[in-house]
Length: 523
Image 1 (cartoon, rainbow, N blue to C red):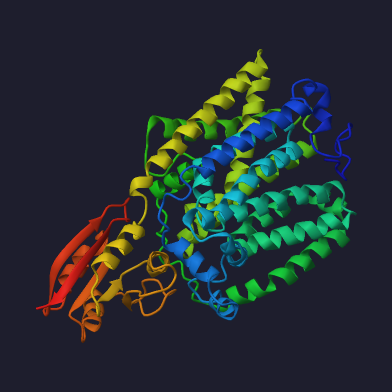
Image 2 (cartoon, rainbow, N blue to C red; image 1 turned 90 degrees about the horizontal axis):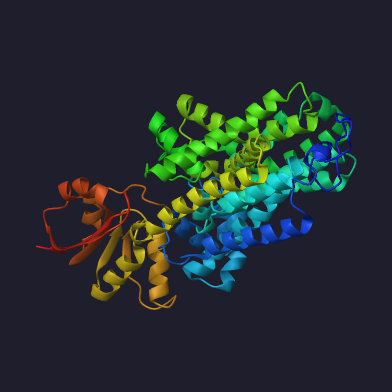
């Protein structure tokens, strides 16, 4: 990175890598051919992990919403994305999914769009790591991201989180290029577009964009120049104005289901963000989280120790940028959650994972630099972290048989046993239910009569078991009720007297994922 601020006596290369370190690290970083081979292997492994069991899981509620929006007529789609339940969230991903839908409607086909974004993030994080630190750091970061169970999880969901992550990596890379060449307008434009698209994928991405400008420092800001900064601010303001106006005007922003964070909730979230899982406190998961923490500490401590020696302002900038990318989104959402409204949730913070793997990779390189057999030490430390990540990824795949709601089986059960005139009531999950009904009936034909919810896209608003069963049974002899096991007590206490249960089936799932189907008949 060629800094506009003359902060190093040795120039940086035009295409990345800190050249003021080149005299010390010459021969340590892998050759171009070795780098290409290693990166190709890392990308291949990351692709294989994200393809594994891609179509195995049932679509869950949010994925069902993605599919519903992807299949709406354009006129209704434009109206629906403004409703409070969606609050203009992921509109970019939904728009892309509308086109991708034509390639296939199976779980594998629909989720493969997120998979492509997830795989593309692996070489992208290498390039950013090379730019900020070194090719070595970039390769290790790519390996950590390739095996990261939390990133793999969302690479296998029909949601826009991996697109957001990819766009933020690109935005950060372009931000570095603006620092390199402030007069080149194509970097301004690219940065503005990538940043705005990331925010339209998820509004919380604005926190990462904010971390860029907090990290830049006064000297670099002056070097970039008033013209460039003004152009970027105006461009972002114009592109994000519709979203900003909506957020300011619309008071009902949803997200009422997010719990207020506790210490254990916070620690579970941090374990997820390091790819260690949120529930299983196994030796491997705790060790992986510990290694991430130690690696971050080494990277920061190494920077602190070199502050008065040979640490350039470019390296200071790289550390500040990476650290703020982690701290600012987590601290902001946590503080707002404690003082105003709960917003702190793990999947919303997936955007911090690229910075986490970058800082961990730099910590491993810093640690290896202190060893006599540097290459051996670095290889062992990297292999240990990647191996532990793969163990956690394997644990994630093992949860698939009981993961989420088994809507395929629920729909098949009802379709094979329903009789003409039956009503179906669903406490939550009409969107995935509707998808599997349409698929079972070949996207047409006779479909069950769903009495509740009254329309798709309203979630479980207003689900009162007694009232719902009373209305659904009016003029009907039989009613199917689908609900989560955690609602069982409330359901059984409010069944109208004129209905009696004649059949009950339980479909196992993970915590909060077990579904029950009860068939009621008039007495």
